[in-house]
Image 1 (cartoon, rainbow, N blue to C red):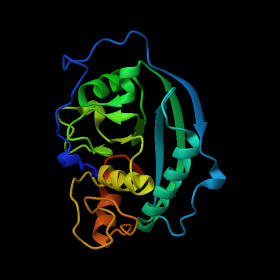
Image 2 (cartoon, helix red, strand yellow):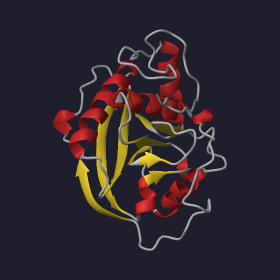
Image 3 (tube, one colour):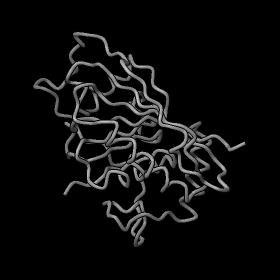
Length: 223
């Protein structure tokens, strides 16, 4: 069973094709379709203090579909609502890109983001990871992005990730909090491995999530 990687723990070396270095793209990366999540579907959060807008990216020809992504994102947003954070909008962009970009690895994914204008926090739905150890999901916050600044405030989810909504919420909490810490508390969302019963965030976790998320420009105070 693969676990989810926290930002401070995501330092595995990537295994690239054969050479370990990025090969120039044979064709440009471009957005071929944009789909906004319906406003009627966004979960209501009475008393919310902050708003979150998400940028979602998938690749044409990948196994991911909007019917799989959208409900998982909405459920993940519902888990973050316990911290007073409301999902104000989410936009899924379908990318046309060389096949190698469909797989997450640190050097190749950095190359992808060098040329792609990305609003953050951003979630990339990839076919698989080439990093080792191979995690279902990986988050990169500001604190551990010094050597890979292009990847700051992004989440990478491999197709087939277990407990997908929980994995999304877990990794978003890492990014918004800019922290790689895990919790040993029973039923806590930030336990190292996801499980259906692990859904809770403590007051201290929520406070850090809101404060760091706002300070880093990832959350906006709700008007």
